[in-house]
Amino acid sequence: MKLLRYIWALPNTILGLFFVPLALLTKGRMQVVDGVLEIHGGFVTWFLKNGLPVRGIIGALTLGHVILGYNRESLSINRLHEHAHVRQYEMFGPIFLPVYLAASIWSFIKGRGAYHGNYLERKAREQSHEE
Image (cartoon, rainbow, N blue to C red; front, side):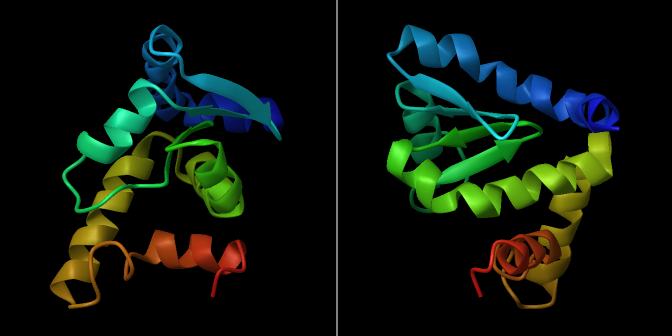
């Protein structure tokens, strides 16, 4: 069953795996925690700080079974939350990113904020006991 979850989330995981050579070439680091590849430092840090259309620095971002972290500390702080997103990727598989985007747009339209009001973010906070 676990293999099927990895396969179902694979299209998104492949996006995350593109960061492996970029991280290694720029002195980034990686480790596997509970079956999830975590990458931080180097290009990943730059990307989370400058490469996304959001304000501020993102501490961590999940792509399938890959978690990109700003640094080792941000991975540690955000691990439970990001692993909740991994479970969401396992549920939605290849449609996770469009579902996430739609949830962000809907939440923004409703005036709850594209991130904090996003249903998937709220569920990840609940599952990681952040609330």
